[in-house]
Image 1 (tube, rainbow, N blue to C red):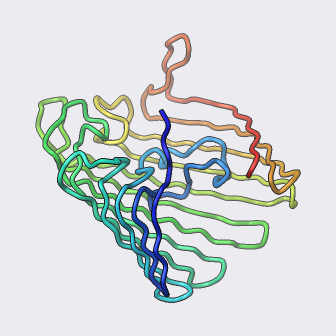
Image 2 (tube, rainbow, N blue to C red):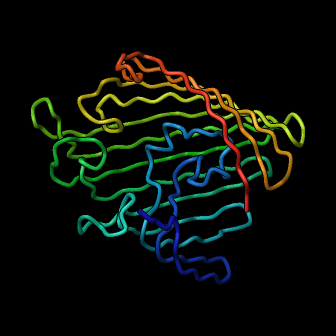
Length: 263
């Protein structure tokens, strides 16, 4: 299936920029295009936020260091809204000092809990998500970043007794990136998430708490070409991972290699 990630019309005048159409989310550290990330694999948090929205977004530059964002759209990853309720988005980006970047964003709107993992389709309920991303360039070669995400879905249907509740999911991610030389980069990503209601991974919840640690090394022989190698370890509080033989385990190890050409 062919899918265009972004397609929108834009107006820019003075401090105001307005876009109308389909565009990527305000949430998250990591982005859809691999070239915009420093790891090969995506974080757990990346799969826990919307990817795109269809609607209208306005950005007002208060100054060179602060911008406000507001918009209305059809919800999480929906070209056409599944209901009549729209989703509101709000954002703030700040660069108060040169090495520090802050992005705070929030979404709230009517969604169906079945879209976020519930096996029973209950009444639409308000889904609210808040995401904070902070990055800091400690020195020229060393940078760190953190992300916190909290998602709440009302009218989430419990498979145990068919009652509705508020499903909750939250998580932290941390990044450390070091440029050993202009051609070699190393990145460590650490994550911890809590999915006690099965909002993220569905019901019945095989596991509630997940952690992962990822080490990615990159070789950049040219500006347009990059080679990466990665080692990742995932851990759960219950046996949530299975191998090709059907054996289950609380942990999973993976190795990945990639080559990227940037156009």
